[in-house]
Amino acid sequence: MKIETINPIKSPSLYRLTGDLLDALGDITVDPETGEVTGFERFDALVIDTEAKIVNCGLALRHFDDMTNEIDAEIKRLRKRKEVIQKASERMQNRMLAAMRIMDTKKISSAILTVTARKSSCVDIYDQSQLDPRFFKTKEVKTVSKDLIEKTLKAGEDVQGARIKENYTIQIR
Image 1 (cartoon, rainbow, N blue to C red):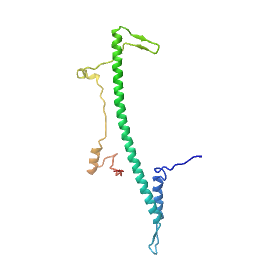
Image 2: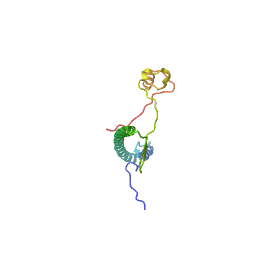
Image 3: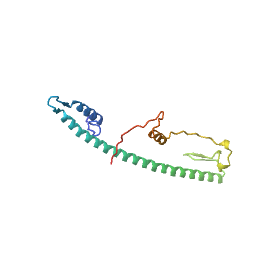
Image 4: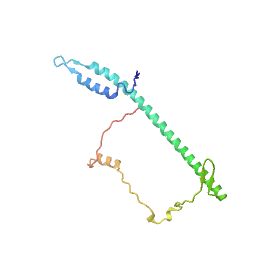
């Protein structure tokens, strides 16, 4: 037997309430002879439910924002921790290599693991200003200037492929 719990965010959904509001609005009628308006009762009741739902959704959005901020802080903390661990690992490897070079050995074996030191090479750029220009890559990055497009459109000029679009956003205080 499944026990169902009611989630105040999902039941009834804001989507469903909005649809019900539109239906109730369509059910409002005016008697042409008397001018009496009927059908407001359902609409008024749905407005109260919808306002409560919007408040609950606002609380959920505030919680989501708090959670994303906490996650961002945790990511920042973990990045710092990762950097500390990587630097500690690099220092330990350098000390191991120095000790193995002093002992003039390239391999140390034990029952658990084997440590070997092998020769490798990499390019070290110690002064970039002295490099010949042929060793540089040029990256061209094209970005759209929305500020310039907005100024141009507001000045009355037509910009092909762009327009000013009106939006509404939710603010929770």
